[in-house]
Length: 203
Image 1 (cartoon, rainbow, N blue to C red):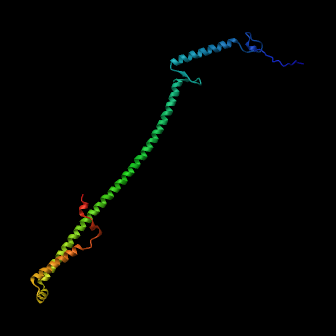
Image 2 (image 1 turned 90 degrees about the horizontal axis):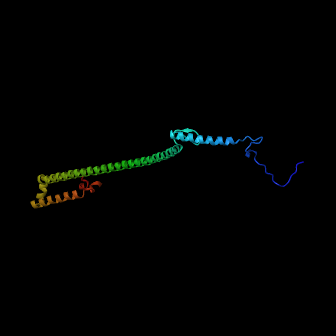
Image 3 (image 1 turned 135 degrees about the horizontal axis):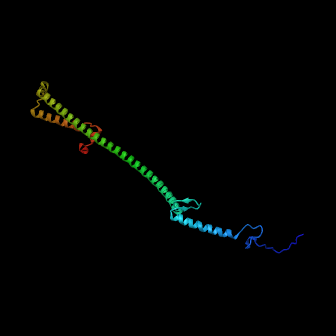
């Protein structure tokens, strides 16, 4: 029956002896071999580095230096972000150009409407002037006809003789006819556009 106590028992590592005890598979020559392998690997990496070949973190052979590769990847990402921002900027500028074009079209339409309204008012003014001339000619014609009737109509002469109308009274009557014609011309009911002056539509 084994004897137990409260003391802790320490057992040395059998592989730490210079001579390998039974059951230990570690040999000092293996440690030396690993050091030599690491030294040779480092020398091989230096030689390959001078030739332009490098090993990455996965020990894969690369033509470029891993640091250069990482910088290239970062630069690629930055270029991608820059291209995206340029695309967004182009969209904003395109929308602004469309808005300006739309405002230019609206301004051109309003300009054409204003030109059309001005031409319409000018034509109305010319029409008013022509109608005024026609009315003046008609009044003059009626005036001449009335004077002719007063001079040549026998009945008018008879009336003048019966009432002893002198030549001065005939002249006075002609003056009254002129006053009536002027009064008719002044009180003629002109259209609404007659309030505009033709001078207001001069180019």
